[in-house]
Length: 140
Image (cartoon, rainbow, N blue to C red; front, side):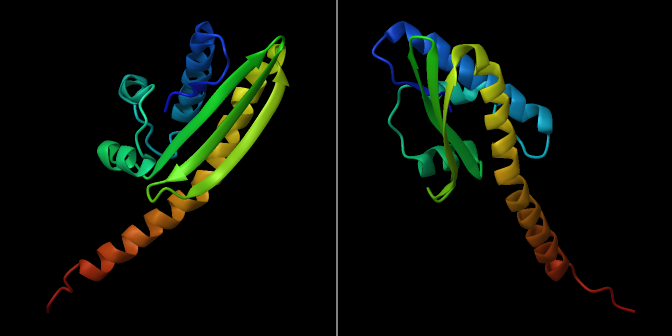
């Protein structure tokens, strides 16, 4: 989801969008799980919609939301990974100098992947087990 601009300056919305887009691009590179396209997620920008509803509409198991604040030469980025039931899986706050902004975006991406990957593997294993149980036994 697009990160919210929490600064008093509406022009900082471009900065928040850039942070969101860079994290989204970083997540797509891992290919461990599907990532919804930017054009689709940015359609929700500025709308107050429940995460559970967004999850249903997009058909996803997780939604990443967050906010960006910029003050002087510093930025605060908060990110929360929420599952389809509205439960927080992971959340973190990052305070950094603006000249470290790309590093913090990479750090956020890595932490999200680390938080999701075990859950994705469990879900795949459960799905395979269910499929095996549903498979008809061959008759001889």
